[in-house]
Length: 292
Ligand SMILES: [Zn+2]
Image (tube, rainbow, N blue to C red; front, side, top):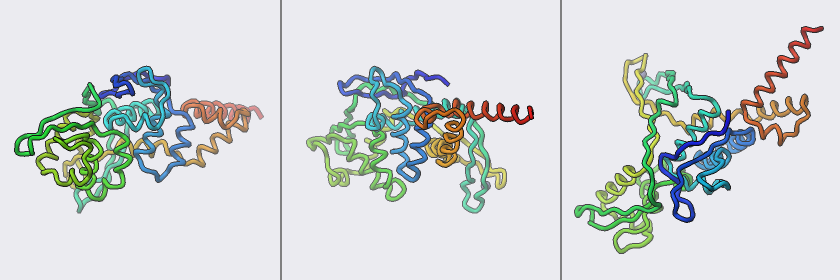
């Protein structure tokens, strides 16, 4: 698998305020797999940032892609890039197992689909900050905000499963730069906002954000219930990549033993190439066995 060039559905705002949409992705190497396996249990969004910094070769003219760069990408752009990296690593077909959401059923069912059927809704960005005017009922103020990015996901991940209101308020506190006369509002300012104001800001953020949709329908064969299974691409891909570390090390050992390559050289290969060499070796040994 070769590197690919793609267009971000949103866009990355660089240090000079320029919007960059062209991204070159290179296939993930064993180093990325080792990193994912080694960070088992860490915050998902943080692993995604590390993984993206491995996979992104450049964004526009920017070639030095750090985890911090990946953190500054919009949530939808990160989703999109992860989807592309998944296609490059394991192909377009996804076979997942979901659970029927009817509490009295809970049947597990297989769903098969192609990543090509996952809708990507672009929203080309034109600046880092946006301005909107709240309705009169919501206070009528002008609000300046930016859209949520990977850094927000990392910082708020511990809240999402717990207190949803708290997580939503903290996200607003991180993204809003000003409301009317208040600059850099504190948490107390956000908490005291009328619900209508929060809803209007969240709606505007959602409207401006690029999205990778995963809305699908499944029918449970056990109870006949139609539901939207919740499929989490990030978790799914990370689990796929998370070959147990000992298996990866065994592959490194096998190749090092026969080819005398260093660990660094072997981990620098893509998974596809590594497995190809292992196959060639296996065929070779099979042939030698038959020769005796
Ligand atoms: Zn069911």
